[in-house]
Image 1 (cartoon, rainbow, N blue to C red):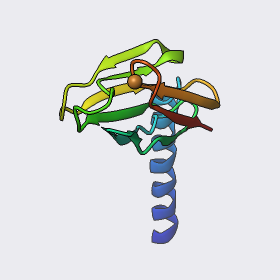
Image 2: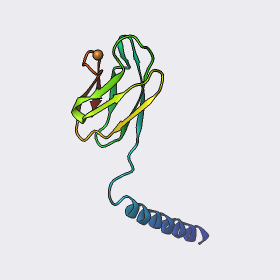
Image 3: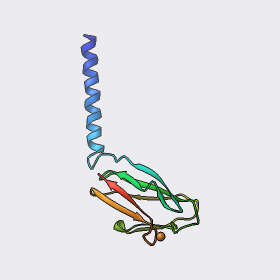
Image 4: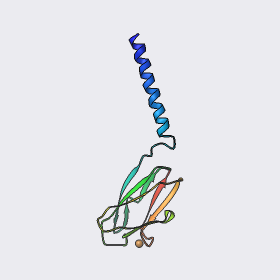
Length: 119
Ligand SMILES: [Cu+2]
């Protein structure tokens, strides 16, 4: 008998929880943000390939670690993003890929490049 009551109570709690969840996620499920540290050295980006998922916010934390080369600007042309990278100061670049494919990122003049692979 006690067990039956406990089961019922548990069932009610689950139902309530489901109702709340249904209300709070009416728009879309909570996105899982992915952060990727990228360093910019004299020869380009490390890592130069980053994986991301459609609809999930991506944050690149980009740090230029040398005055050699031309990594002082990072551009993501297809997203109209272009950011200065002060030496040794992490710069966060955040966006949400809306479709699968490859998004290229480059230095200011397009000599260094990297790819965000969106699946
Ligand atoms: Cu360049």
